[in-house]
Length: 399
Image (cartoon, rainbow, N blue to C red; front, side):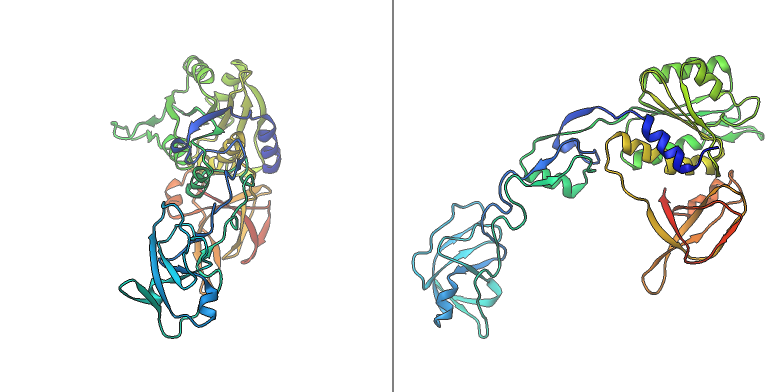
């Protein structure tokens, strides 16, 4: 069996990069950028007023002036004005360019007005450049603001808009198929016999994909039948970019998924990873470039393999810049018995010093999916047998 790190490497080397598309900016939230975004002009593009108040020349105050004739008013969007006399001032609003001849802004709270005269309140001092956001201090024209491989959240979208980008080049959204297999599965809401179980894994997988920015998700349930598996998997291989299967990959007589996939020309890159839970994980590639990640059907195994392998693989296929896994300290000691990498569900807790710790929350086995509802994710612990003490630092994967 290969290690989880070797599985990461093999998936990364085989998964094809998704194509690039040009989309209107309003459709790019959550997408991965495929171009560099540069500043359209200096940011800010002018000396920008940051407070409502009066703009004046600080030298006049230095020479003892405390009263200033209000020459005009300038709002954001107005053509910048010119100060007429050193002893005058211009009423200004936040966001407007600093009027020519002025170098300071006194906030409205620090002045009193009587008619067309503004007076500085007692004790107010004025220095050059106060309450002025100088031109180009955030970025210079042509400077790179965002790099390819950036996930576009609200700040990044705003930066692209400020750079004048009506459309941007992003990675296309993959067409995903989530397929559960097994004769025992029954849809939620449908009548069920005592020996049957609900089809739940597919819903959990689809939720994880959608919450991480992958909306184009189709789901299907296929029975443990070679002919049915061949027909439906052939269809999905021809119509989707990535297939995520749950069930049918272990060693039982009805674990038919690997043989059916290989009969359809899907090359098996690896089968089984030295980990618990999730050892039977299967990964392969079709000649068309469709990737197949076939996960064990036990619910805990499925959930962990989605967060540990499927989501990072999709991010890499979109060109998302690789990020190291968050590392966190165990809040309590935990013993790993098997000589396998161990994925331990945890809940996060903040202690009195403000430090976040991972509190072990082990399940009663890989079928105990109800225990996961109270957890935030899982940590990856090295193979045992070994007891890892409180304070041991481990990679954290959130659901």
